[in-house]
Length: 511
Image (cartoon, rainbow, N blue to C red):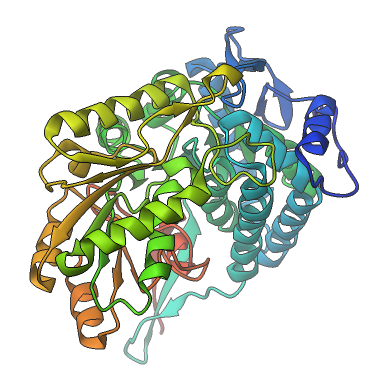
């Protein structure tokens, strides 16, 4: 039996409603920092650790195990053994479903604790962590679990004396490398279909936000996921991440993160065993507003949220705001007004909508881009400053640039912060050309009351998700992923099962 964290039961009865109550809960929190391999919490084999520093106030929360190649080997051996023994892979889908639904229920039961870990670890507002991240994570696990016993094989159209069966089989050992901006949600999009289809999983959370992944391991065990089937390896990308990507006994590698790292992972796969690699990478998403948008004020409010939500640390952030010239000045004013509701505050205050930037390196990157934008000749309309520095936390104002040209760096490069670039256009064709003039193709939005324009532009946009008259829509039924250098494969929906299964054709000749 593994050593479970000190907190194996919920740490509160009623969800806190004030900053003081959340802080009190934080003061009670006992945090686990070890890796989880083959059903046991343990320190890294080499004894290496790294500090987990909260961006809320600069306080070191604890030392976390920094895993390396030896730990990756140990986890892969455990995962492979569990897979070959069939303790999970050969369970009937209905039984895997019941275990995963229990896993989702435990996430909900421990929702306050998970939300608090997420906020302390990477700085997002506690209200968002509790009402968005925790429910979305549990929903992803539950939805996928419910679907797995409803996915059937196929029969080919054959002559009467033959039977052609087409079936799906689990790949084996899946390594999932997930980012720091939505640690639980991004993990759930990977581990839910991987586990549901019978694979063994090794989860490598970002070193910037490992705490919820480590805690989820104990909940997975409590739910009934056998030892070796779900493992968690905290550590750096260039050590344990690289070791998993090069490992000859990892069958599938799934990743969400930067495009540069995604490209390197493809190289590692080619250098090793040609493992399947599925990637969700960067974005520079265009949010296109026509003058005939049904409600400019609503469009402006959503444009503000599209760049300020989660401090702009969102792969689908609407960081390029394309506005028809006839309403450009009016619309910018509306967006700036809407951004006043997104002013950064203490992440443990339930009223806060914009929290802390994940770490000093990311804050410096955002500030650098704000300076680059001004140097390139864009006009700083609002924001652009670091705030609340005296708290020890990492906060920056949502920032708006006007007069941006699409070739500028602030319009072409993913900043991953609350920096909005406003670009004008005159015609739908011009808007389409600007929107598609990007190496990325993750998401886009179109605001217009004209049905013809909406369909024309949506069809022409090279993006994996297109939203009409709203921003960032969809649920677990909609596939998520990108075109071009935003990646390959799709998370969510039944299409996610494609990533974690191999198709097998079995042909039978009848006498």
